[in-house]
Amino acid sequence: MADTYLNQHVFIGGCSRSGTTLLGAMIGAHTDCICSPESHFKIDTLRAIKRGAVNDHPTDLLALIKRHWRFKIWELDLDTPPDDAVNSYPRLLDWIVARYARQQNKPDASIWIDHTPENASYTGSLFELFPDAKMIHLVRDGRAVAASILPLDWGPNSIIKAARWWMRMTSFGLAAESTYGPGRVMRVNYENLVQEPEQTMRRISDFLGLAFQPGMLEATGFNPPSYTSRQHKLVGNRPDPSVVNRWESKLTARQVEIFENLTRDFLPFLGYDLKYGLKSKAPSFAEVQMGKMRELFRGEIANKIKWLRRSYPLWASRDFYAQARLTDINN
Image (cartoon, rainbow, N blue to C red; front, side, top):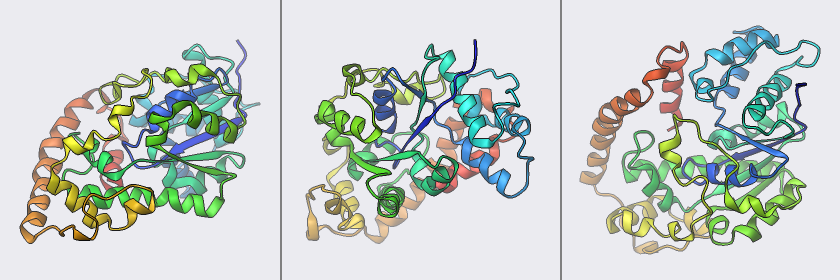
């Protein structure tokens, strides 16, 4: 079977736990699209190229990628790409995703849907690699993001860090919107996606130049790899509007108040109403210290043990611990 190469690139980005996987699964259900697993390795490889740590020949780059633990999550076996067609790093990425599409029984897919949350942080680099690419910046109520991230074994472990982390990660997407404009970067609110899925998906389809297909509403266009399947249990189901305000029961009243105080006008700037407004009280000295202790003991000890146990099969990768340190920096 001849290789099919991609001719369009769609990057979805935003703060983690904002619904990037859900959106990827919805767009990926289109017959012309393939939604791949998160591709954190693509920027690490680009950095290696820029600093001269690896030869930019596709064969050498592929060898580097195949060693990367983040690529091992794809569970994809690759042979050697044909030199006559794969002659650059962007073309190599296209070839890898096309092979993944073949594995997923979508050999004719020509549009790559990449839902890696950190894409928003590297919009300029991605647009340099793929000059015709488009970015979808997914924004979700930060209080809902905090309620979703705090129980996990990665990311912030206190409401104080969660508030600052959400603002920092969301700001990358806002900067991309401002820099590249609505023709290249589209903002989508998670709440609109789950409460008005058809209307929202029609707008997204228009932005991408796709013909809307009703099957996109079923969110069946992504098959989560085993490594992340527990975090993506809702993928494959239609968007559930009831999740929008679930944070109100998952966070305590004091957590909500602290989050709103630390984010100040950031929430209403993005269209989210406040419960406390200017009456919110800042975290006390004791609450700040408790947050630091939680980050230390839960984040640096308990969660690290859980994360390493979950990642056990990937330990053989030479890039595993380097990427683990990068994950800490991004969080």
